[in-house]
Amino acid sequence: MIILGIDPGIAIVGFAVVQKDGRRLKPLQYGTLTTKPDLTTPARLRQIYRGMTTLLSEYKPDVLAIEKLFFNRNVTTAFTVGQARGVMLLAAEEAGVPVVEYTPLQVKQAVVGYGVAEKRQVQEMVKMLLGLSERPKPDDAADALAVAICHAHSVQLEGQLLRKGLRG
Image (cartoon, rainbow, N blue to C red; front, side, top):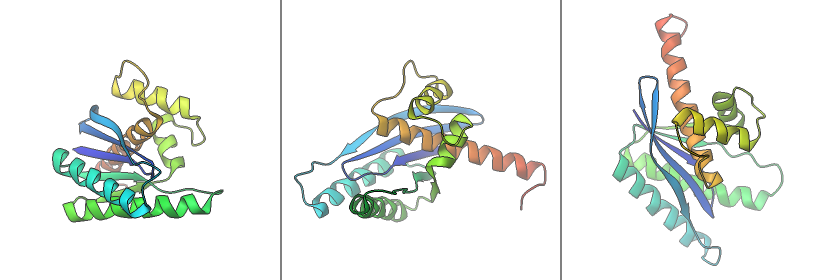
């Protein structure tokens, strides 16, 4: 299974392509899509959309796992990031790629085992789980890797529950 993990943003979108083979997770690619602040919002959204369609076309993921928005301070930022998230979801829908969403709490719980873990703890676990030589950078890419790992663990748990007859 190929998972495209996304940490949404308007200035920086973290992305991670992770292959799940049984219990093994292998990072295929990770990084960021960036937009310049001097561009109009529609121009930034177009760049994000084009970047997403390129990733979806190149890696042909089985699923797109994206972090749900959680903002309690800046409403304007929340709206703009929400718009960016919308074009990401549209790109996935047009590519026929199913979308799953996880809260930051779910991601931290799945990766670290502790829902209020610090960013550094999450990055260390991502490094360990993926066998990386150093903590992934930048933070947005590390967050996208964590979202992909969260989905991989969720799928694995779902399969275990199904085998035990506890689901469905």
